[in-house]
Length: 267
Image (tube, rainbow, N blue to C red; front, side, top):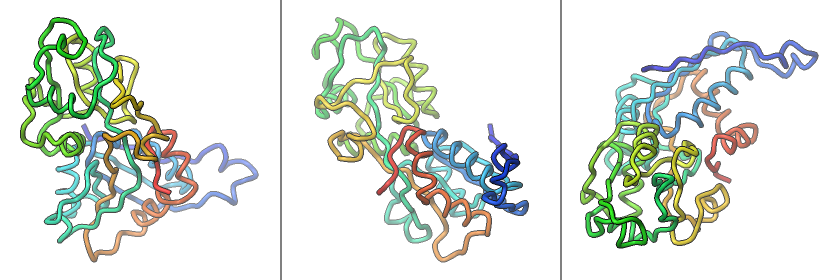
């Protein structure tokens, strides 16, 4: 369902600090794409509308592939992708990385397995390991949960683990939240989800002994990670409102907002 966020003047703007607030009733920006970016883009959108009183911001969570297509076809101002653009897509589009996100491997809280190597993760998802007992878990079949084709999360996961077009998914779900819910309800399930979307309903396993965090994603020691990308049409100028949102999102002012959303802004 399309989510719309309408801007209201903040209490700060009503105070003596009103001079710090910008008034832009004609600012409007539409975004479309990655469901993994929901928390980050939502936080940025709210902060943008607080900064620019009267601005309107919309976010349509359709998945990375759909967001890229929407940007190319001019159906949104800024597409959102949780994977890098392909060489073919770069012919018509520009991709600007705003943050890095860890892709967390999640299991049911009842699962005793707490650490996996990248190779073990690949072996699980390609069916080479099909029973949890082979890696220290219960004597039970492994239930593989993943994202749908075109998902940026799936693309990032399969690229890092070297499993592209080889994963033997039991279920392919269309949103990060659905993956977390499904894994939380099945003691034999394993899935992957954005660090920004992680909840205590599931258990995050370490990868090669490294916990996914802001610090380990930034320094590269956590290996399963991918970019969050703003997608725009090559050679075309953004609307005034969309450009204002783009500039705000890459400003120093936005960095703590991005960090608070659970991902890592670029230096």
